[in-house]
Length: 168
Image 1 (cartoon, rainbow, N blue to C red):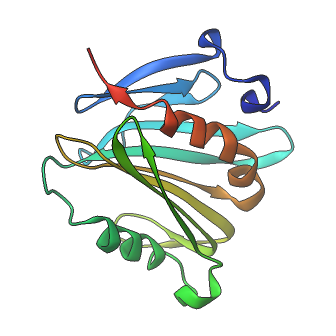
Image 2 (spheres, rainbow, N blue to C red):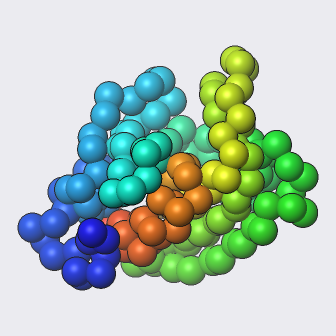
């Protein structure tokens, strides 16, 4: 069942805070212990009929941390085995409550693993990511997983991004 098709009512979401920004995360996403100190929050997402789960990870490095929007987009595209021209990339810019948001999509063979460690080739994977240009520094939110799962989760992922607001 896709929560986004139900409108993501307040009972369907749980707030999390990254830096000074609050996001409404679907309760269906399984909260996990972040796998590294670079990760501020981490969730596992599943869909019926899709064996391999996906992952949603929130990164925050402070003001000016991790480079700019374009540098991060290119870094994410290089996490795929195929050349960028073969990934069917899409980039969309929008605004959320006065903050810039860049939404990025790509699909191919994702090379899973830490930046400096061994990699595992994950065929037919997709990336759906958002970069929120928040006042205290950009927040990077990245969803990766099997292509069908990521596509099915797209609406709820975008709604989560659009829920971003300065935390009280």
